[in-house]
Length: 204
Image 1 (cartoon, helix red, strand yellow):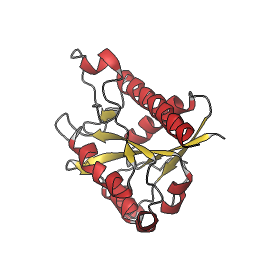
Image 2: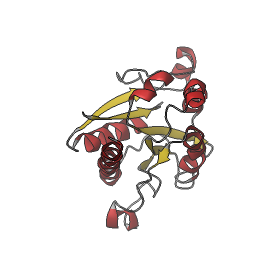
Image 3: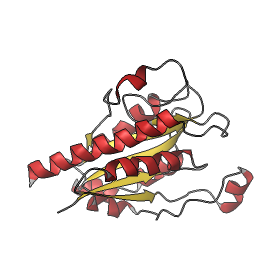
Image 4: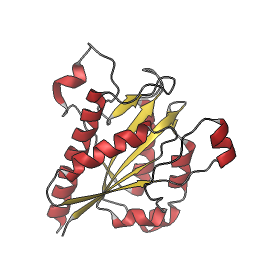
C-alpha cells in the first residue's frame, strides 16, 4: 500500500506555494509514495485580499482538518507573521481539536517549510514556534537537519532555509525562491518521504 504524504500550505503571494510544488516533486521521487498538495482555507475576504495586492489562489484543493487523518505524513508550509506562522495556518490548526481529542495524528511524521521577508524575519523562530502545534498532536517532527549538505553553508549568495526545513526570502514580495532554495525544498520532500516510508513500514 502506498505511503500518503500531504503537503499542506498557506500562501498569500505564491512564495510558499512555489516551495510546496518543489517539495511535492521531491517526495514523489520516492518509490511507493503518493503526494497530494492542499491549501488551508483563507480567512480574509476577497475585498481585503484585493487591497493587499494578493494574486488569485492556486488551484490546489482546500483541506479540512479531518482530512489530515488520512495521511501517513504531513509537511506544513506557511509564511511568517512577526516571527510566527500566519494566522490562516493557525486558524486551521485551531480547528483540529477533534483530531487532538482522539489523538488521530499521534505518531505521524510532520515537517515544516516557510517564507520570510528578511534574513532576520523568522527563518528559525517561525518553525520553532510551530512545533508546539505538532507536539500537542503527538506528531513526530522531522527536521531536515543539515542533510542538504554543503549548500547550507554557502555564503556566496543569500538563501533561506535552516535545519528546521526549506525556506525562502520574499523581500518586498518581488524576490522568488532561488535555485538553491528550490533544491533545498526538493531535498526536504524526498528526505521526508523516505522517513515516512520507513515509519509506515516499521508499523506494518
